[in-house]
Image (cartoon, rainbow, N blue to C red; front, side, top):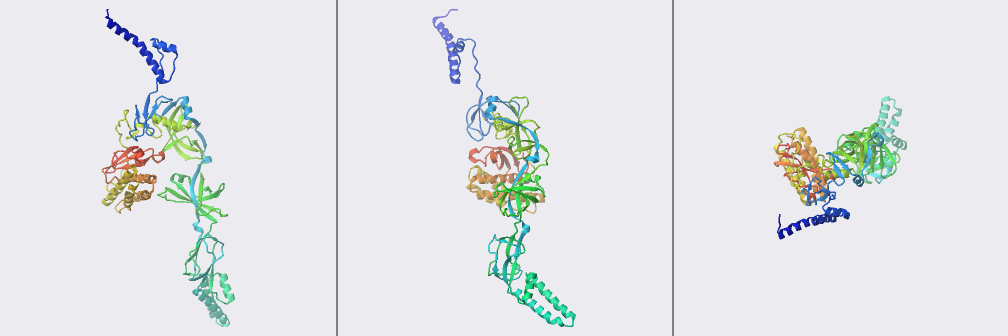
Length: 626
């Protein structure tokens, strides 16, 4: 084949350009990667010899620190909360093996500071301590009210201050009483008449005179005089103008309504005394605590006023009712207070030893990751280096420095006690099942996104509990609709960070949560009274809140009660009511709320994370979810 001069020059130019192109590419890669290579290797590569293959860079994706299920190939904003996406290098020290398993490199394990400890058996009663807050109160059985046994004028009071200590038999007050004076004169005259009739020959007359004296003595006793005082009047032969009232029992003056010079009637309270030799200690027990308490149980407690000192009491009463506001029941202890160290209204902390004395599986208190009703631990897979598996467990009693495990673990298994949260975070970033996402990233509607950031089709919402009655009285249905409208107005105001706007609907909601109509069934009426009380009180707290954080805390209780009402009594008013959940709210325990329209508008975070949340249920008019 023959070439013209110009064509030959072009072919030679292309052939000579190839080695220079390869050399430039190799140098550029080294400069960008910061690596080095020896000159012979570079020359060999440039000369077209066997090339040195560099290790590939980890594939980099961009995700959201709050919503790790969002994964995009380039930087940008999170489509849920609009935070800046952060880069994550896949394959950089961690690798997902199974759905709930993750393998760390040795360096990644050291960086995460992962430590493990074995699941062991221990005596639950030896380490389990239930702590209950409470306070000291008067023993109601040892409160004495001293009253005026006869009407008259108070001439003198011996104790003039609340807090004065009174001994039994001590004089308390002196009262001038015309009625008492006349009765004393009647006694003296009866005695004189009986002396005159002593020589009478008729036995009946003498008996009658003696009976009259006894009757007048009993009348004086009923007016408040002791037998000794009556005997003193008979011996002296003179009536006393005043009566002295003595303390029937000792104690401390806790109330003194009487004043010197005031006129009193029979039964008017003069003093109230409390005997503090025995006091009550009232402890607040939450619902899960009640299973460990019983009447007659010995309980130790401490008081901040007496550091290092332990007191003892015995459970004498457990309240049969739960306070709907605090969700606690009163547990009463009878406590001896011989030295008077315990004073009413003093704060104490009860310590109850719980457990039946048997053996139980226990894990260190740092092992479980607890969110809402779920508890997750990470277990080291046997015979595998740095392979960890997430596992849901059922926890029992909280011990002093450990948790009792009811199911999910076996004795001898190694659980992660330090670094578990970092392992869980790595699984979240890899969109695998974790503490916050039991089924992995695609589990929730508003949090599901395709690789390019487009929202995926939301899953069907779980079925809700049907309402109690298919038909509600018309007037009550209208009240329910008013209550829901006020609730939605509060939700909208909180999602827009507008504290001032929550007050009018809060007042409207409190007004709508009134007593149920007579037409409701007994079960529905009982349910309404309980939930309406919670909603009314929560609405009052929201209306009185001076900062939006307080309002949002009260909104959590309001929302829980409103959701129970929707599930039980139905969704009167809007065509549909939507339930949403934010897993980050309520200190990462999750919080729910309702809206009258679809699309997340988070009331717990407002503008800072307006779209953070997921739809979990839909309640159409009729009371059953889609």
